[in-house]
Image (cartoon, rainbow, N blue to C red):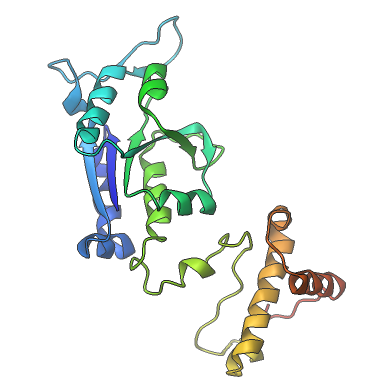
Length: 249
């Protein structure tokens, strides 16, 4: 999968994209990430990419011409590339959206700055607008990094196990169950016995129940859209009836 990032600050991406899982995925050729400096497409010899807003107001607005030329440059090589603008006004980013975007072989990510981009750039060149949360960042670069990380997890081979993404929080609208590793006893706080039993069916049942418990306690709003089986509903009734916690939960 290919990501082309249109930004005024390409060096912001150097370290995050070279480390950990994303760095290894790039080395294996599973993802390709290229940063493109929007200033290189300015019509001005001083590489001016912003101007004051028509009608007055605070701040500066990113000019339409450099954005248009940058996007057209990428699309001249692949007209089907899907263009995403990172903006607080976009659709909320979530796991389902990350999964859908992972089916796109080529994403163009436009990182806004200042007061945003000229509205004509949005109307003429953007396929989709995405927000990573109800807050304002200084630019779209950090949002683009979040999107790349979340989307890349769905690409086969990126994670150590293809089942890892399936077991993440939010995959089926539930939070992930608690995780433990050695030692089994840390200062009197113990790993639940079922996880040491070797009984895989009992472990699966425990994990499902704990995922339901954790979601019910921390994000009950997610349960409304979760695809719950009759067994899940029975477990929820049991959880709500006997909602007592031990030190190991």
